[in-house]
Length: 115
Length: 116
Image (cartoon, rainbow over all chains, first blue to last red; front, side, top):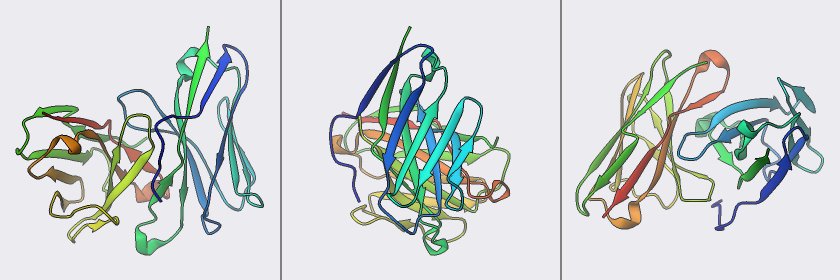
């Protein structure tokens, strides 16, 4: 459905702290999830992905956790840096090849890292 | 990773003119490309799915005669905003799926359209 609203959820952290960004998804048939980072005036940048047969995946300084029972996804960023300041979106893929496996994006969270 | 080039990055035009936005996959073949629209402080909203050599599939509420999509080759999709009006002002983003990297989507850098 449409994303409605004029205010992004925000998270403000101190440099060096760990950040946790949360996302709730709606489609229980979704089988693939991705986190994107979007800086102002730019397109989304891939961070990390996870399939529904996993509940945790780690990358460089980032970890994604998936809880299918409550349809919840989280992104953990370790030792957050000022360069991590951006809007973070989760996206779900409904796995329907007939639809081209299109992504549905969450509302996004504005992360601000204070030096 | 794969690179998607989107051009132009910014367009300012008068009401009533048409604007074409190009999306190119530079180092991979993209059988499917997607066009999104994003308003300030909002999420990306899928407009249409573009398949090479066939007609685009539009999301509900998106006017196909207003937003013309052409995907004539495996590396190029274009979005034309016909007779643009101020309410069409938005950030338009394309993405392309690289089959070689499972289902990952790679995004262009976006086009900021401002219609006066």
